[in-house]
Image (spheres, rainbow, N blue to C red):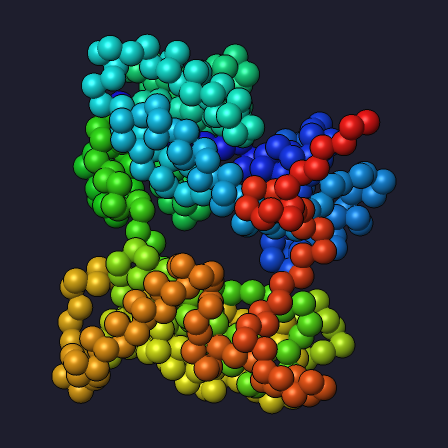
Length: 433
C-alpha cells in the first residue's frame, strides 16, 4: 500500500499560516516578477481565476472583487515544505518526496497491523497542528491510485482528509467518478486519443484490454493502465529524476544590451548545471530562448530559440555557461528590447553513463572542471547561494558608480511577505494589546 500526502493549495496555505486574516478570502500567489497566477485559494478557484492568468488582467476580468495578491516567497514555501516532510517521516516507514507539496509513503505491511484510514486522518491532523498546513491523504495499492484517492480526499469533506482505496469495489467506484484527463500520467494528447476511442472516465480506460493499450500507446501510458488496475509498476527513481530542466525569468525592466542579457543567460545556465549535479545527471542538449514583450504593440515582437548539442554530456558550470553564451550570440538581434530569456537542458542521463567524444574535452580537463563545480557547490551550500560565481555571471559595471555588482538578478516582488521562519528580522512580533 502507498499513501500520497498532498498539501492543499500549498503556497496559499503557507501564507495563511502567518496571515490568518486571509482565511475565507480569494487569494492568489504570483510568479516571479509578479507576472502570472501560480497558486489559488479555493475561493479564488470558485471565482473562476485560472492558473497562468496574468496579474494585470485580474482587475478587468473580476471588477469590484477584492482579490488578495501576493508575490512568491519561495524561501518560506521551501522551509514550510521541509517541516511537513519531517513530520511525515516521523509517522511513515519510508517517504519519497515527489515535489515541494507532495510526498509518497510506502506503507507495505502496515495494513496488517494498522487501520490505514485512522492513520491517515491522524497524520493529516498532526501536520495541521504542528505546521499549520492543511493536507489531503490518499491511500491505495499503487502510487497512481493513491494520487487519485488524494483528489477525493481534497474534494469531499466526508473523507476527513483521508481517502483509502483498499478493495476492488472502491477502486472501480473511484475510477468511474474520475475523468481520464485527471489521472496522473495522462496528458492532453493522450486524453484526446482516449476520448476519440470512447474512453472518458478512468474506468473506461482501465477496462480496456492490455493489448489494445500496448498497441496504441507508449510504455508510460501502459504503466498507468497497469497501476489503475492495481499493479504497482512505477518506481520512485522513474518519477523523481527530471527529464528536462528549465530556468527562465521575465525581467522587471526590458533589456536591450547584449552583455546584460548574456549575464542573465549565464546565470540561468549555471543554475541548470547545479540542478543537474544535485540529481547526479548530465545533459546532452542545451537550449537558449529569448523573447521581447508580446504585450507591447508599439515595439517590434521577436522570439527565437536555438539548440546546442554538446559533444560530451556535461553538468559542468563552465561548459554549460560557455555553450549558452555561444547560443545567445546566434539568436540575439540588436535594437530590440527583451522581456524574457531562459535556458533549458535536456537529453539528461546519469552522470555515471557518459560517452566521451573523441574530439571533445579530454578526460583530465573534464575531471578538473567537475572538481571546480563541486568546490563551488560546497562553498555556495555553506555560505549561501551564488557566493561563488563565474565572471560571466557578473553584470556590467554600473555607469554611475563604476562598480560591478557581484550578483544583480533582481526579481520584482512588491507584495512578498516576510520570511517568517528563516530570517530573524522577520519573526512575528507579539503585541500586548
